[in-house]
Image (cartoon, rainbow, N blue to C red):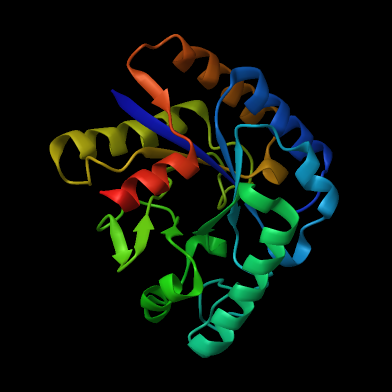
Length: 236
């Protein structure tokens, strides 16, 4: 059995691209983990979410605080852990108020970057999950913190910010699946598809629809739901 999961980043308000994303998830009955920016979240977004949509926390405000020469990050090396955690906890409370039980204690840091020193502090702030990009090094990023990442990015960030292309997207999936099978990546980590609704061109939307249609006919493929994946991994 091949297990996939789907995460979409940078959600905030019910723009047309979000509505299209939710319609696609509903049409093909694919569970969606929607990473929402707490500081930017519009209350009108949450009533639109279908029954298969879970809410992850996409940082706190998604502002780039990187110093000169530092890669983009909301959590720069110059910021104290206490300041970062205070911002994250405030964001968590806001998402819980807006999304209710849909909101999971799973952090998806903007640009997939987070200081290592923050990891052991997250569980004490009611985060039980972490999702970044790339094969995880271990199932637990820290005590009490399950990591389940994404591995296929549909956006060509360095060359036009459009769809990366069908061949490139499928090759990313194949590489992670092969690494799981060969033992060079954790075989228990489901292969994650990462999308960014705001950056999708028509080619990206068309690819997703074809992907969901194709995989629905495959008996050896299943789509995992975030709340089940993280809860199941934490219980192991």
